[in-house]
Length: 357
Image 1 (cartoon, rainbow, N blue to C red):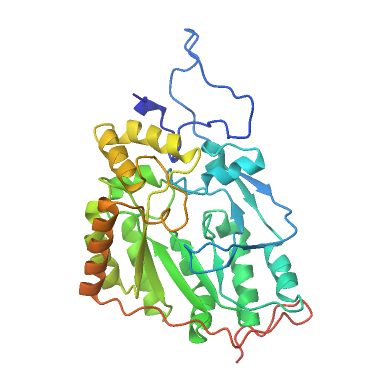
Image 2: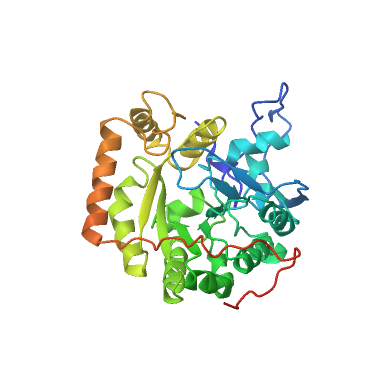
């Protein structure tokens, strides 16, 4: 059984497993001299410049309602142990464990690069998803303001954008979001995993608390910004019993739509999540993983299109039925359609005319 004292305050992972591309790795070993006593020391967050030469990523996945996205940051300080994006840190020669939540790569030229790509001849305007892999409103954004610069450009160009976040920092940009909303150019989806503050504290240690996310939904809705909710991820045994209650609370707060995603455990995430279970929910660990395998055809993960988001089998069907019945009962009205007709490329690469018609 994993040692619960191995947990690092404010972090989701407890160690740095080798990524799948490394041929060698090291691990701590107790040599009898007390070198491992006293528990792990707190780890600071390190910000590293990412000089990518493009900023829009395109996909052809049938499982998501968008074909392009922008991630101003790589890695995420929120530290959600279940995050499906953790394995992407291996491409940066980093660990999907603690490195993912302490070594944050930021793209200072994101807005500039976006302007260049939107200016290309023949660019076809379709909604851009902002912060899908890693949160665009994680703590570093408070100082770096990269996401805000991207939103300023999108507003100036009248380009639609969909945002996914679990951070209350999105409220900082309510002025831009309200202007985008007035032109049917924005949807904001708030991720609500649980209403249990204790579970949230260990599962997603640096994300906004559950009650704070409900307040964010209220604030955005009051400002006329179309807001929905993703109950994500749904984790068998841990938070799936809360699903109906979560949907009730977010509907009361003003959410116009809701969706859900089942827990995904690709690559290194599987062992990180298993370790978290042993440290924080040891009596439920085997039950949780048994249910996960029920969803994934007897495996810990199923990456196939059409199944990776919802799972398959009787338990997956039961979850879907519960979700549909709750949404029907609560009468979510749905989000307004995006307006792609007003898009125009950046003018001379400058950002201006933010609030004009």
